[in-house]
Length: 408
Ligand code: ASP
Ligand code: MG
Image (cartoon, rainbow, N blue to C red):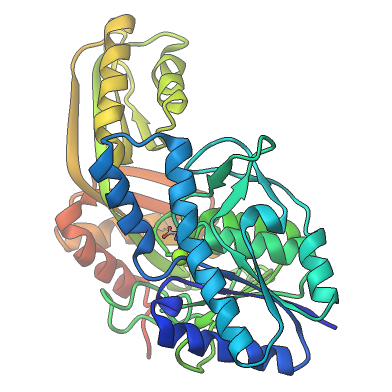
């Protein structure tokens, strides 16, 4: 029997009626002759509420305790979905991440899966049961509960699909696929019927609403992921291995999608001595404090002093500043200045490799729209511009037009 893994996001299991609807869908897939394992997220905004609750008790909740607390959200939804299935006559069993065999490292709050022994899930499937696994969580070798980072249920689902050798992983959410841009900002955004792992990883890492680790895993194990709506029966987007496109495309066709993020903050460390080891001295302590740094720009030095700028998530700004100010003193740098009202827009497409025209189109489109570019970073298949947060929507629309991504 073919093994199918499905994942339902928080909105899809947001209340009792939706949970019953999800159970009907799972049962239908089961009756169609599949062996089914399901991963669920916590109901609605449960995780946010649990975080607020923890912060109302402690300004900096202990990471181990916080993970146990957050893991309960997914336990609630996975047991309820299981009960709903049993109500309609299906044999179903729930499992926590630990029971399902998910081992992680010890990075509380953003743990990585290091081992997935799906033996117990497989046995239950072999016995004809539907297995409902709590997403977003695992356990360390010491049996401490961990969580995988916000949105981590996607990763649980893809990891489960890979561990079971499933043909594909179906991710059902409140959006019905991957679009050329966020349809809430760009009304004529187009749904993509398919997209390659590489492009999807860039989109996910720079704003699209999927846990980037899930795409990394999907690519590694070559497990196709279908993103579709749980509410409406319309075709979704298949993320899978796509053959590279031919040469000689129009510049406009080289870009697959535009994505964005808000809540970006920048720290600039002025008058940094230009000598070996300085970057390490700045970024190692940030890494040790679990702060992830995104765009980094270091200017050419004038008189052996240089400015070093980097961006972090706005929620990390305060702790990043503390760390950086400490470092500034020890390496003899000047002042630290920060700016917290930034965002970023990115264009992504494998077609843009070695296509210098793409960057020129991006920059001139932003210039015409009066959007000032604060910083620029690139990968082989992505160009990202850091801009004023208030101009993010305009920038996204402008780029979507400039690369002719819309309908018609
Ligand atoms: N419930 C978790 C979150 O809100 C994990 C997930 O939904 O994937 O981030
Ligand atoms: Mg999600």
